[in-house]
Image (tube, rainbow, N blue to C red; front, side, top):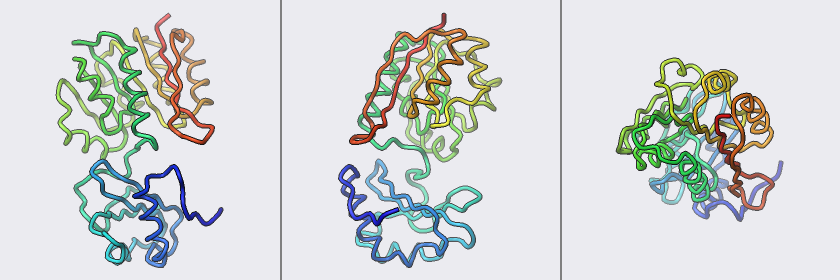
Length: 260
């Protein structure tokens, strides 16, 4: 633990928010266990405070005390339950949806993943753990019939508002719970959290292989585990690493798996 003053790889707008917020820490929840600052695609800044016990009652006061506070949205994340907006507009970007630290490099990784599938025109492609629809949008541009699944309802709601175009079906729910209801895919892209693929998802891909499967991973350990499990019916055709985390040991790894 240390007192963070500045971070050279964070967006300057978030660091400005952090410097202003440090002057008003007393307005955070009394039992705050985690604080997250996020910048959305519309330029708004978000403060997500996680705590147990009483809701965050000082959020409106914090927003009023911050310079340019009208561009700040405050979220309260209870220890048990879903995050909600407690100060500021509640209709904008879902700050709790996963976003990569380095969005530009992440888009390069997604484009590479989509390119590896080849010609997907009129073909059904699964986009599992699809978030707010960035990969789905790229697949739709190439003429695919996309089925995009994510467990975060707010992320799916935002994706629907984007108007992705093409044939894109967006479904909120855990991938492992929805497999039986999804149309059979010709290809798939998976971008799971660091914990990797749920065992039921792995079984689905090994039990009924797709021609091409691209796995985007932020954790080499779970990637190695899942690729080993998938090797029953797939072989690794290509691997590419993307430096999403400058000045750290972490990389995003994209692996193209082809049915053996």
